[in-house]
Image: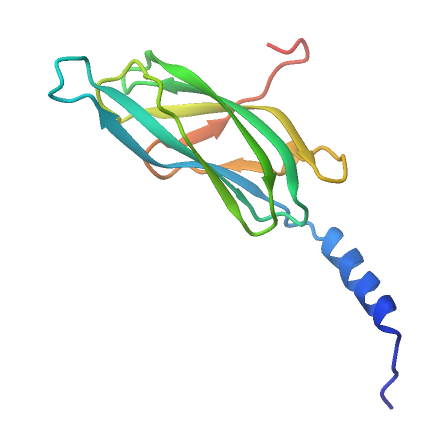
Length: 150
């Protein structure tokens, strides 16, 4: 026998099931990086494209990440700080970074990303759901701050 239930109850139940999902992940990746300034008489520089992809169960209200870039010989190539706002579920947001990194090419750069802030639209912290991607133009890994914030 099929039981009928009020639509509101079914919608509430579906919403509760979505929020209980454990596979909440927010990916930060650098799928492209381009060199600008070649042949211009100025020193060429690398400009990364930073993307956040929300595969979590909630809208990301605020995500701030800092990335330190390293050359293949482990020297500093500069750093960026990027803020993503209101990244909806199953959507992505891309930031283009147009300032110079201290690298005249992008080949071989790696990134160390620190999560400065991550907040879902319901006010809960989402830092534990952020992942980096070790593929793309600039492979990255997450670094953790110590207890003193360093």
